[in-house]
Image (cartoon, rainbow, N blue to C red; front, side):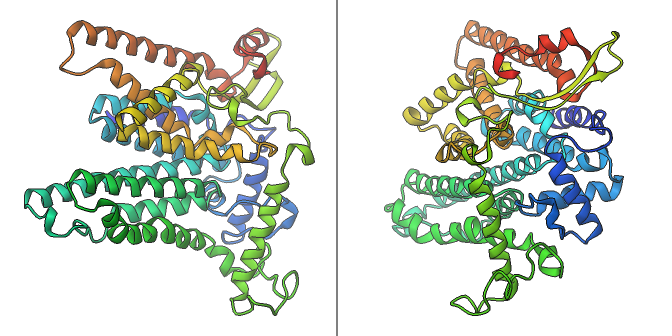
Length: 477
């Protein structure tokens, strides 16, 4: 099941990957990151040309794009192959996560298939931009935390079986939790792609503490909160705070090793040689200055100060994908069978998957609140960490592709709903048969919807009439 879904993902994500381009040059925001990545190819992994202007993200994703260019050259395949690979790996992870959440191989495969059929994930996995890398590292961290949860519960089961739960009012110690360390590294890598990875550091950290308290309480530990504070909190801070920080700083290896990186030597220029921080290494102070400049850019990237981008959107439109983005449009294409053809790439979520998002999330919230369903709590935390923080500054220019790391959690939520629709062995055959029909119909609708959108997801030539038929809502224009 896993291999089949991943193979489908690879075939679709890598289909005609080098097209379209803007007459051989990158499209949309690829124009920022692809030249920066090419500069890294030539400069040992570091950017040194401030003329590129928007060097305001950490280096990791651009270094990964650079690896593709190093192998395939400066063309569409070269600058997109790493993102496509990240997209396929995300599908693999979602299959395994779905399997772990539902204990069903079929539902795990269904989760991966739904992610394959999502338009936003498909397009963004085929772009030389940053967000496909954010998604794969966030999802990898989530997968590692689920493995840690299962592992520590298996350890607790052995403690219970041995009758040792009451040996101490705080409960047992766990020693090294390797999966949690893996999660910390992945979260650090997510931050090394874009700073919004820090939202997941905070959210997943809180989630893990709640899991630890719940485990000790359910096992009958006398003082579960105190036990978590005494025996789990410090290791959690190490794994999910310090390890991500160290990983993030390590991602700047090329910058530290360079002499010409952006803002590499600012002490004595933009930074004074004295002061309370003079004891710190000059390289660290220069990196701090670099981060201050990048933060200032993001703080000033507002609609009121920088103007309204034609394809920006606000977060309340994102759950149902009401404001997609046009990455490329050409009305001079050929090959559609008529004299006037259109080639377009639109970042758009598959409506049959996205439009039910609100009822899916409300159902999940009800399950989380009334039944304390840990699966829904985990999925909602993952969804909320990538979505809710954008409401803190609504004047900021924001874009639909910010939802890329959130899509896997939407898919997992949909699969949990589908699993509930399918029912369980204790329910009547009529109830289960009805559930199978509903799920099959919904899945078929999603797949047909994805096939319908396919030309505007990959830039295949279509007629003007077909192009107009693809634009269902006024907000899509």
